[in-house]
Length: 76
Length: 347
Image (cartoon, rainbow over all chains, first blue to last red; front, side):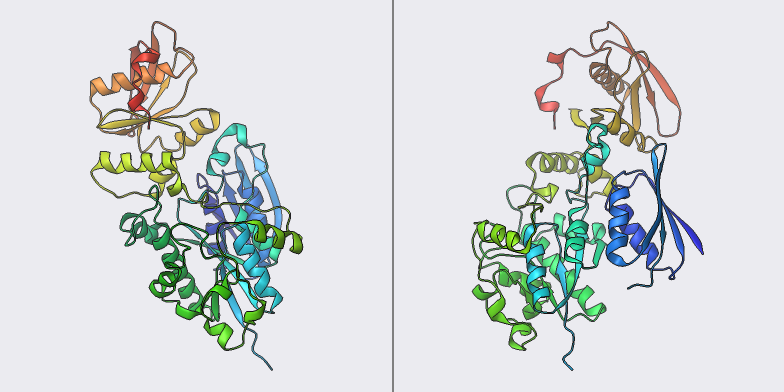
């Protein structure tokens, strides 16, 4: 399943916290597209994914927004 | 087979918690980190907002530390429950509005709750006896154990030899002989240990990880409470205190003035909550009005807005005031002269 999460206007670490809380409700293999306006999220969400066993599929900037798409890992 | 013992570590992003985790990992303990977001944490917010700072690399230190250590990190939003700590600290404040001892009791208590929910065995922190004037003294460290409820499940690996043995030490889950006996404010032992472990890039918050320790920020927060006749706050309030220039020309309202493009953009996000002003005849900042204003106040706010824009020396500046419901009013004003901006307006 594919999901979206809007964290626009939130400053780090809130986008990471929202991502973490959402991912905790998903299943391995699900994808989550996180939309942010804090550029720090481009570093922080991938860092959070690396240490928690999830995979960043794409990470891009569109105008003033940053979009990180994650594939949920198996919790390893 | 011996049971794999698990510890949850309070991770601030600084060196001490990093070293404390490393000491536990060397003893074969499975460690995961926990980091609490109170809203007052200094995590590069101004950095994130201000355009000119955005080219600089930015990182969340707690996440970075966890990655260096190879541990999971759980970041917990405690903004709501933390209000009681800020508003009613049993042990009072430090030099500013920093309730350090109550804060530590709160965080260890929350870590205990997380530990129990996730079936971990004990808690570790990077505390060092005598290192901080309020929360890390020989007489206050037992208070943290007692009031958090963690008791002897709280291990401080960096200074454990100066403290009574904890349950994990007595039970042999960890070897007390391999823990340290650091004390005082001297950072040299930690720096040497960091070098030994190959950590050559670490943050040194030393109390600077919380805006409540900042004199200027604490002054702005006190002003907010005084103006509202209430010590309540929400996340937007405490975020806005980190952004822009704050001026209180009258007791009933203050102005939040963007200092550059990034801040103006950030303040734009609050247009539905506050009256906002901007010069339409010259370039200039976005200004929010926090408070209730009459026509005279609005005119003064427009004059201040004009003063901080490129029309500051013009005879007349056109300023548009837009209300949260979307209706607007145009004001033609003379910018205030520098001497008319009274020094005590600045927060």
